[in-house]
Length: 155
Image 1: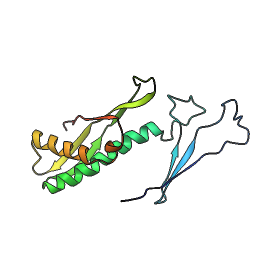
Image 2 (image 1 turned 180 degrees about the vertical axis):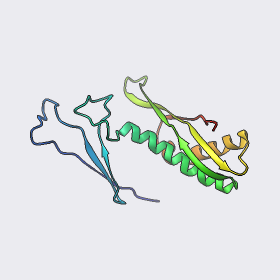
Image 3 (image 1 turned 135 degrees about the horizontal axis):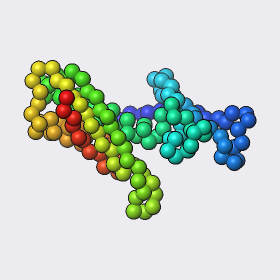
């Protein structure tokens, strides 16, 4: 089908003591198209200054990937249904919790899209059906055990 590549780079600064854990978790993600993104452990997991709050952390990236994938399928299915999407904004959120096995995981991601349509907008039932179809088709949602909920926002 397709192949995807990301290069993750990290190295300590010369004066950072690695073995005592006092090293920066800041690193970079470089993607096959050339985009480079500053990344880090989440400050909720590794305290500042050993994490970089400006970097994208893996947990945020998972939520963003779920949201982005859902949006891309939603846009395509809305187009197929002849609805013109004027804008799409999602305030997505992920919840990390301990599972029954004691391991921490992203148990739930809630997508909160605010969609504006040019011209006729779909009914609530049709909108829900397009979201359901997008969720079922989303590669990322199909790849995780995280519960993904969609709560549309009125706008």
